[in-house]
Structures are given as structure tokens and as C-alpha cells.
Image 1 (cartoon, rainbow over the protein chains, first blue to last red):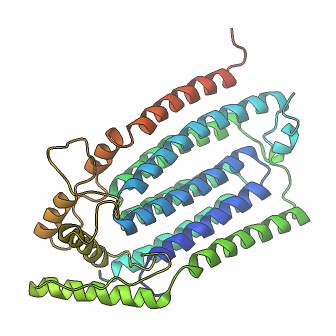
Image 2 (cartoon, chains in turn cyan, purple):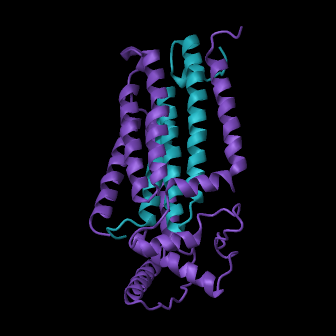
Image 3 (cartoon, rainbow over the protein chains, first blue to last red):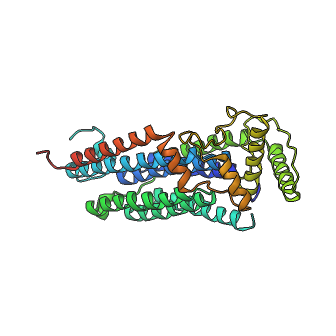
Length: 103
Length: 258
């Protein structure tokens, strides 16, 4: 470990942020913050892709990160629509309220 | 590479860690969303440090722009009052979750550092220095392949080391000691426009003419070439996915389908 950023630094940073996102998913009960934590995890994976891509000096990782972003956008749109729908029925965004997946 | 690259890396890394912790710690979803936006900007900075300029712009536009606007729109539409948020209470559940997160981090961290051979890192740096010096003197460096458990995890991510490794790879292609099957790319052939890659030769020209620059890496051109050639089917499938997501979101959010 030196002061200069190497691949390891990026990987460890990405692992740390992924773990933070994981803790967020486990701890928070607010559905919106839950999805934000998932975005956090997706982003940390993107960082891994791009770090490996730079280190291999080929750009496939960028393409994968690009697809992850597209999937994240689609996921956010559908997830927030579901949150809106649940909120209309339950007057709450607490995921514990919706644990029976019906209303 | 000077002092700026490491300095900026540590600033961005610390910022990303702090803001992503803020996302899961803050109580009000609005503040969480704000922290997440700042976090995405720090990520964009890290991408720039990794020479992924296009991805940095897309990160700001798509994540910092489109997705976070969606989140903020929903948060403000729901207009949660303070009592809706529920009281913050610390329970055993939280402690276990945090422990699980820590365990996850140490698991990944050990897995990463186990494959790192510290000696090989030093060796890689020496080799990069040798190549750089040989290039300065206009001679050819003789590189000996160092055996490694996971080849290359050791490389420094600065431009000098990357260029050195890249040139060594190119040279081995030319000398025939490595076949294209060893690496990912075969050398660029202008007669085969559909044999994708961001051409090795082109990159070498750029490196040769612009010292200290890694040419086209991370810019729009190679990404577009890859997207419409090798990755054209996933690209089109993404379009279908987005269409399905749009329709699905509309149907779910509608009160009643007429």
C-alpha cells in the first residue's frame, strides 16, 4: 500500500461503498432510501468495472458500466412507481407495512 | 504523475465514503438524496482519475441528473411529514446488520489483498521505470514476464505504467511472441471495419505523438465503436428493457387502467 492510487485502492474503496450500501439495505425501512442504497451498490460495482478496465487498458468495462447504468435507470423508474402505488394504499413508505405484497 | 492524482484520489475517496455513509445514516429522505447526488459527483471525479471521461459525463448526466431527479420528484410528491418517518431507534437488528456489513467488507478486502503479491508490485514499478527510461533513450527495453497468481493486479494505475505495459503488449504482438488470442484484441486491420476494437495501432500513434497521454482511451469514439459492433445485441436489448420499464412504470403508477 502506497500513497499512489493503484488498482487495489479502487477495489477496496468500491468494496467499502458496496458494504455501506448493503448495510443501508439491511437497516433502513424507508423504501426510497432502500432504493438509494441499491443505487450506491450499483455505483460501487461500476467503479470496479472502470478500475479493472483502466488496468487492463481495454474499454469493455466501460460498456458494462454503461449497461449497468441503463439497468439502474429502468429499475429506479419501476421501483419508484411501485413505491408510489404502495404509498397510495398504505399511506406509508415503510417496507414492513407492505411485507404481504398485497393490499 | 505528480502530486495531484493521489491527492485527488484520496479527496474523492474520502468524500465518497462520507457521503455514502450519510445516505444510510440521515433520517430525512430529502437529505439522503442530496448526499447521494454529491456522492455521484465524487464518483464522477474518480472516473475522471481512471481516464473514463465519457463515463464520468454519463455519471453526472444520468445518475446525478435523471435518476436523482426521479428520486427527488417522488420524495417531494409523497411529501412525508416528520411523523411518517417513524422514530429512529437503535435495535439489535441494526447492530447485526452493521456487523454483517463489516464482515462483508473484510471478506472482500481479504479476498482482494490475498491475491496481491507485494513483491510483484515493486517488480512492476521497476519494469515500468525501465521501459520509460529506454523510451527516453530511444532503445528497446527487454522485459521478462514475471509469473504471478493473478497477472497484473499489481499494476499502478498511473499513465506511465499503463503506457509501458501497453507498449510491451503491442511489441509482443508484433514480434509474434503473443498471439491475439492471448490478449483480448487483435491488431487493427482497416480492411475489416467490423472487427471492432479501439485500434491498438491507432492508440500507439496517439501515444507516440502526444507523450504522456493515453490517446483515445475513455473517450466517446471507442465506446461508440464497441457499442454498435461487438455489443450491438445487448445495446438493442437495453432499448427493449427501457421501453418495458417505461410501460411498466406507467401502468403501475396509474390509478386505474381504463
